Image (cartoon, protein in one colour):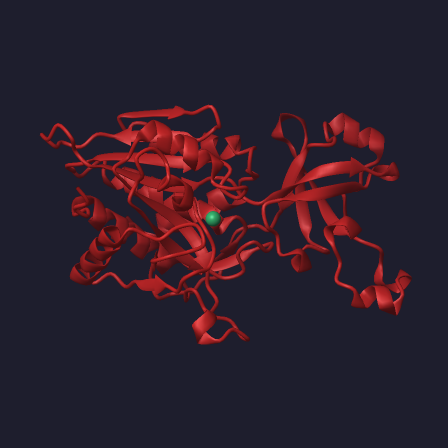
Length: 355
Ligand code: CO
């Protein structure tokens, strides 16, 4: 595994548009990257890509380790078309509304063809001072694709069409990268690298992977995935907020860029299983993998759904810290992805004893 391959796959995944409920382009990217490295894969009825890689355990009941990453990203849906072709929209997932105005967007039309536009609102020199002081809401904004109603129709853009903010992937050259949808294409990247690595290395336990749909609207794909995969333990691979920016006191900073993967102890959706965390931490210390404990109790992840399915699934979360999550573009350190892959790889070879 090398940083070059981590960077290439991260860049390609980042630029794919796959808003919650419309993730097929992401699945189409992943399949050729894992085909031939696994025993079985299928797409479930909610669109998640599920993968099985058998181990060589002689036990009748080997551990079944589930590794999850969500493939959707936040975006928007067209809710109304104004005369002259301006698109009103509603968010899918939680945007930081303050960051939307003036941003470049892509809206999908027929055959998943994307169309470029911009988020606009009433121009500043036509607003009153009182209006300018009021925070803008999404209902005050629109998307301008530079198209009239007929052109929209021809492109197949209508109420219900989806899209998202678009910023191309950038390698900042010092081990830092910038791009859209790092939440959670980063987790997808980690799983692809783990799948490839363990096609070469024998492992005892069964590995099951879920590339889950619809996380950003409440972990929906992860719930159906878990029901099918029936794991004995699970780790969600995520992106988490790096709060190491001006204006945030240390006590309120969930995680820091460049200090290694962040292990969740508790967030708003789950109390992580202590045995999994203990093993993650012991392994990391043994192998000299840098890590941090994510400060509770921010955010929620697919693990919040996964651990409540069936008889219950002991679960935790390993996250790559990322600045400016849920805004048009975000920033992270390649080394944090690299160390997350190492952390999961060691865990697979030496998982927690839960039974
Ligand atoms: Co996420």
